[in-house]
Length: 325
Image (tube, rainbow, N blue to C red; front, side, top):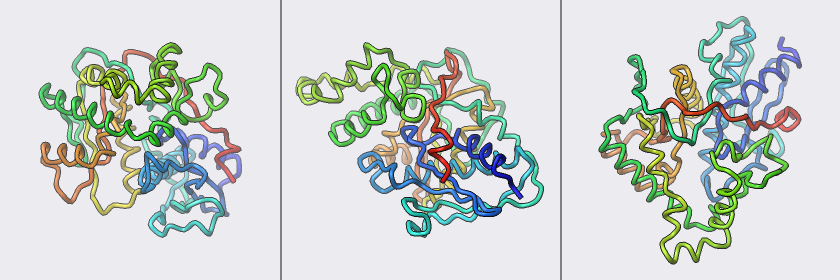
C-alpha cells in the first residue's frame, strides 16, 4: 500500500507537468490504493479556455506525471479516465479527471527522469542545427524549412493580436502574469518575469499596454509592436505541430502531450507553446491544411523547439497544501 509520504512525493513530482498559464489546476487525493486527480473548479479561465479543454489537457498531463512518479518508486498504475463524465459532485469544488489504481510492482519509465529537466523557454534559441537523432512521432509534424516556419510565425503574430483584442482575455492573462516586483504568488504559480524573459521595465510596458493603454495603442496600430514574436519564433530551428485524434479525451491527449514534452527534454531541448495558433480556429485549420493533417485530427499545440540560450528558469509550483485535499 502506498504511504502518505510516498503519495506526497508523487504529487510533488507529478505537479512538474505543464499547465495552461502555469495555473496548475490539478488536485490530488488518496483513497486507499486509489489516487484521484481532479480539476479545481476555483481555477477557471473563461476567456482563454471557455470549453475547459485546456484545463482537461493540463489535468491529463498531471495524470501522466502521477503515473511516471509512481514508476520511480516501484509502483505500477492503472488509469481510469472519467473526465467526460463531468463529475462535479463526488468531490466538492472539483471535476474528477481520473482515478489511478496503484498496483503491485511496476517498471521504471525512463521518461520519468525528465520531469525535473523539462521547462518552457520563451527566449531565443541557439543558432545551431538540432540533433533529432531520428526522433519521430506519428502525432507530431516537425516543421524545419524556413518558408513554412516564417509563414507560421506570421500566422502566430496575427492570431495573437486578434485574441489579445479581447479585453476579457487580456485581463485574465494579466491576472496570471507576475509582473510586480514582489507579487505574492510568484513562487507558486503563473508566469513570472523570468519565465516570460522580460525585465521590470518591459513588465511596466506590458501592464500598461495590455491594460489601460490598449485601446489608444491599437487605434494607432502600435499593438502589433507590443505583441509580435516572429523574430523570436524564427530563432527556433523546429516548429512542432502536435496533433491527436479529434475524438480523444482531454485526459488521454494531456498524457500524450506530457510524454511529447519529456521527449523534447530528453533531446536536451526546450519548447514554448504558441497557444494562439490553436485558440484561433481559422489559424489551426490553415496549419492542418498546409501540413496535410487529417480532418479526423485536432491540432493540440504548436511549439517552438530548440536548444535554449540560457538556464532553466526557477520553477513556480504550488505547495502541497494547495494540491492535496
